[in-house]
Image: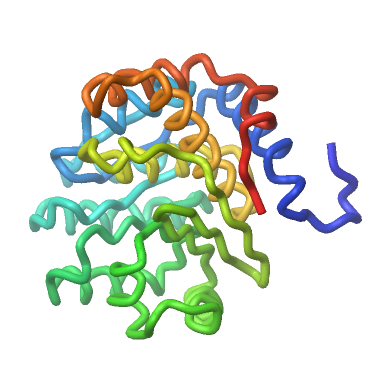
Length: 261
């Protein structure tokens, strides 16, 4: 364990992520996902493989109870229907009353003004983290991606940004780390990013520092994807293999394979 008096550096992230992974398996946190229809099955299986418990309902007459009993909440805008938008607001309010974390995955906000406006309406409710790609970030921030725009966005919404791409970047509270794990085939599997956001949600459920939680989730996903990619014949076997890789991932392997700078 790190001394509480010493600041966390990027070199510490792999060992901390290994601890977070163990906490997920020990505590089996509940993660409620309001996500797109394409991602539901894969996200649920990803959470089960890592040791968390998923739930997915969006029914307005029960969403508040499900969210209140969850340890973390994911709001994913991939399927942008009215029922999910109503459920998102109800669930976020429930999490706020319970003092529990939620994260936003603003899928395709760069392609639709209505998605952008809805995502912007959610951000003042203070998600602990926002996981998105460069195009989505630029649509939400109204700025070209650079260090200054990341800092402004994080400060404005008091959130941690998990920016995913060939190299994942995590930024929040003046801290930045880059994660170089993963495999090219991951981009060929639909809902991989959405399921990754669910995994970050599991980390937020057991780790109070959202910067560490986001970095841990993206590192765990990247290492599992790397292992699966080395064994895969194509995207189909990778989609199955990453679930097996997550299920079998141990702290030593995570630390040994981590590419964090």
